[in-house]
Picture 1 (spheres, rainbow, N blue to C red):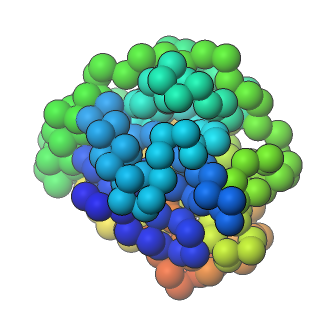
Picture 2 (cartoon, one colour):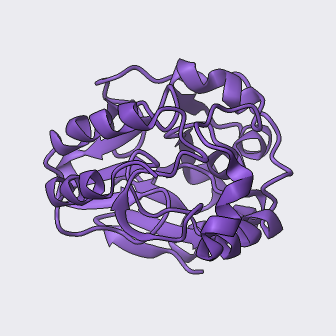
Picture 3 (spheres, rainbow, N blue to C red):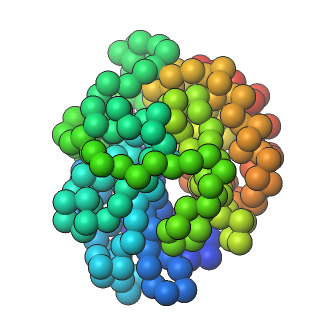
Length: 248
């Protein structure tokens, strides 16, 4: 799909139920937040062109975490664009080995219990979910740091979904990119609305629920999740709803 502006100079690309965000600055440089699945590669290129950019304008990639549906094009961006990729060090092993990640619950049971999730997982498979290469040589993200990349996002360390998960706060745009620390669509259940991701893909749901407090502390108005539509009613309200849903 074409890129949709979801905040000032922040555009969303959605493919196979996975979001990629393009953050641009006044100098025309672009930050890519998460890279989607392999089939999103041509869509990212098309989105850049639609927005008047070229691949040379991409200055950096920041990964909220290292699950394969977020790192699907990271290695290609390093190889073809020569851009740095930023990630918290606690997720570096998963980035190098995309299918070796911790999760609480048995994944195979979810498509049976949640048929709506089966459709989503099928789309992810067709988009190359099992063809994601590892990515190495990453630049370390430091909690609370302001990254020297377009948009100058502040790192919001929010572990639980993965050990090194980090959201990105863009205070000048009143935006919080939550990655999978808080989503509005759970790919494993198909349920919509603010929530943490099911234990089929979350390392520690209790910690993920505790990290909601850190997200809420940003007081951001616009919430951009890794899966699902933007939430425009404030992170505080989103966190309240996610706590009501709880772990699943």
